[in-house]
Amino acid sequence: MELRFKINGNEVEVITEPYIRLIDLLRDNFDLTGTKEGCGIGECGACTVLMNGRAVNSCLVLAAQANDSEIVTIEGIAEGEVLSSLQKNFLVHGAVQCGFCTPGMVLSASELLDQKPNPTDEEIKDAIAGNLCRCTGYKQIIEAIKETAKELKSK
Amino acid sequence: MMPSFEILFPKNLNDALNAISLYKEDVHIIAGGTDVIPGLNQESKRFKNTRLLIDINRVPEMKGITVDQEKISIGAAETFSEILLNEIVQKKLPLLWKSAGTIGSVQIRNRATLAGNFVNNAPCADSVPVLLAYNTKVEIESLNSKREILLNDFLSAPYKTKLGKDEMVTRINIPIPSSKLNGDFYKLGRRRAVAISRITLALLISLNHNMIDEIRIASGAVTPIGMRFFDLEKFAEGQKVEDQFLKELSKKLGEQIIQVAGLRWSSEYKLPVVQQIFYQLLKGIERRSL
Image 1 (cartoon, rainbow over the protein chains, first blue to last red):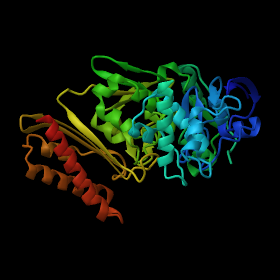
Image 2: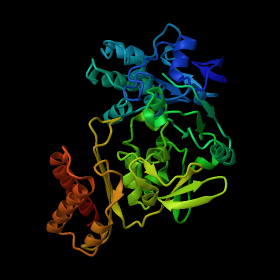
Image 3: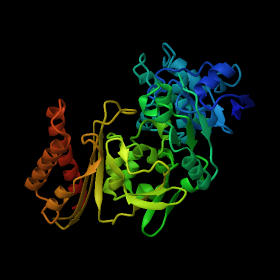
Image 4: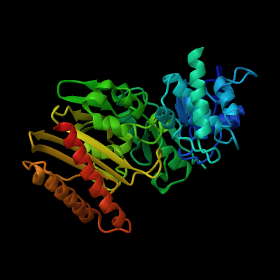
């Protein structure tokens, strides 16, 4: 079947099969390997991408279901060579250790800041509750998101 | 590995019903697909021989939340995130709104639907106790028929429902409850998000001064399917909300759950927890109502 999307701002067309998941299409057809597969059942959130602005587990979406939509992966978050403020704050606050959960965390956080530019601690925790990190203990991640919200507000 | 299958995206209800009437066997209806897609990928027995998926996201008759004098009607393809954004649901069906916010994670809620939560009748479906407490009705259609039945009747046995092979759940209709009904919802899982529930309870009560006018009690996860406790409700109606009675009612609920579910390895833990939680829910509602 033939599908059309916008991926990280670029219009693309691709021929694929109905049983291909969005994560496989992104990684295998477009080399967007920043999207990670952890559990494959929607529990770890490492495969999180934005679909029409909303965070989804790309292991739980068929590529065919994403037809005509706008997809943003971690590769679409930086502006060229310049990291976004969320990415910078993840580095500054030590919110990245092994890095496997980071793309998903950043995308979940960017949906949050898009919907609620001034989130409470509870709202931050709820937004990343579907993303598992086994290194940082979450504290640094939450701080990075809070700091980004502050920066975006003062801009 | 994903098995191979076809997928259809009907653009209206008639096309969707037509597709299901043609195939019937080896076909699954999906909206979010958060249950079916990983099931297929893991080659789960539940989805063995699947040849076709029918995606209902583009069927306008199964979208949207409408409100009239008597009821709030939620389309079968409406996601939990869409339900959470609806102010009328938040105001008129606060228990549903609260339980919707505890489903899965943001990522799951952005895809998963209320109908998908109960349509396979898994005992741990979080929204079921709440929907049962609200006397929810399910609208079901096939090419040649349309009917509406109580969710309580729709859910027949664990993983079994009254849905025919050529039928689809099209809408979920919830009678707007009297403003006198106050309630709460409780869920216990092993993790903040994406946790299979161990205990869910929903409770609605209307008080007349110090007396229980109406009470609705429903459970999930601790019973083989989500269920109402009609006997217990009758027993409680007309009684005074005194501490001694609330304790007795909580004790009786625990006994009834054991009766339905049987003694399990986890009963020693779950029984006192259920009783205590139910008692706390009752006390909380009493505090807010008086």
